[in-house]
Length: 218
Image (cartoon, rainbow, N blue to C red):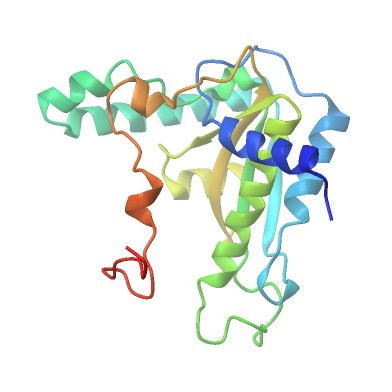
């Protein structure tokens, strides 16, 4: 069992975790810290113990700039699709720190790892993908504990990223994560600060026995 200090530290890390964009300090993460963070990701639970992930670390400056240019084009296409009021809200929101973070980690998912008969995936095939996402969560929390920021980039075309890191089907890239030292972590998430969308209170998300059922003792 862990003591209250360790427990409280874990809850603080979960609470402090942010999707970082503008706060990267422009320094490269130390190799030993990077390996600790990757080890934490690799310790994630996985269906059938398949560990269906791989991690492609991108630190070459020119390659970071190339991917950032691709993302900028995708961002502009999204902005152009918005109604004018939402576009005004979106315009000041920074959506990536690809170059500033100096390290990108591409997480891939291989649905064939483990063979045809994977324990736990017989009726819920998505559990393999869920496993890879758990690795991302482990990485994110470990990075926060190390004083690093992580930004999940989602403005890209999957085929472009697959080709960029040499992934061939059925393996697919599922995330580009910007990872690096930060000047600070925002107290309030960016999308709330900029007025894009606020979070839901826990009370709205918890249900008892069925999605519409009130609590027994309510």
